Image 1 (cartoon, helix red, strand yellow):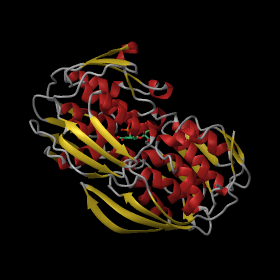
Image 2: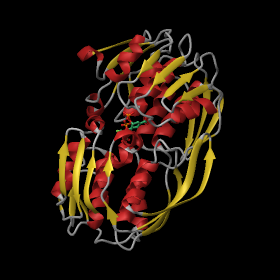
Image 3: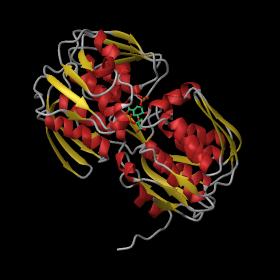
Length: 433
Ligand code: SPQ
């Protein structure tokens, strides 16, 4: 058991947010498929993104990494080698879904697998449309879950209406479209993160977007290697934004945060709740917006969160539920049934964790209902081996009246290896030698 107790200390000071996980994955995938060299800066060396690097190394791509700097000698879409071993996706849903799109079009055979959590996550949302393009993918349980076997082949161009709000499915189909015999068109239910589109465009592939939701990629273009600056991950910044918003006396500044508008739903929620928030130094890099965010403690009021806002804050919902415990009134989160198929069932995990700590919270079929404001207490919790649940619990412990225990914190390294050193810095805790 790990013990967390921070005695309501305010968060003060400034930190630089590490690279965005979604963009780091995509930078390795697209730079490997590009012709020429790419230099990536502020790459996230979390466990999930390291899986993606290892997979492309196994397919013969030369990738050099020194901390957050990565150099990739792109092979182009025709020169990757058949891997000698099965490819391991670990805990990473993004690696799994996007790689299925790529492997479906590469001219060789691969087998792929993941850890116990990833093995339970649905893959048929990607496999079903890939099969419509002609992909050959097989596995147990009607090839709906890992492990899977893929024999890459020429793919048919496709127009597809997504039945789920998922950037991973959209991205997998666009990546498969790089190997198709014509243009690829994807229609979304609501706009989801558009990092794949932005990076494809920056590397020379024409992408047209109509009404924010209809994306067409023109075929027959070669990806060109590029220097990529990965913005800080707003999903990592979220933990400290919420921590400062709910801990009296806090005032922090987060530097270099990605502000792509398909990801900034949390900022909208904080503003609607009445948080004291300032964004500055906004600039664009490689098709992505970046800026600094200052936030101080302020009284908050409840809001409703649903509809097309959900994809813009899907990964922040666990920590938003914590935020809602400190807002006056009833916050309703709805349309968020996708939370059930993340690293764990996040509706259940958030409900069990926050109710153990004394929150007034109720799970629903598609979200959570939270009544604030409540004083949180200590308690015994689990991470469910889900990085976002573990970090949400750590932030909850700052305002808890007593010690919070948690079974495991190692999963934090999946997306934010420096999380505890950054938290200690903001709390003014000196690390012993
Ligand atoms: O990669 P993984 O495990 O799926 O990661 C998560 C996360 O919390 O880090 C979800 F569990 O983020 C997904 C996100 O929920 C990353 C992602 C992407 O990079 O495209 C898109 C979202 O998933 P989805 O299923 O809505 O497309």
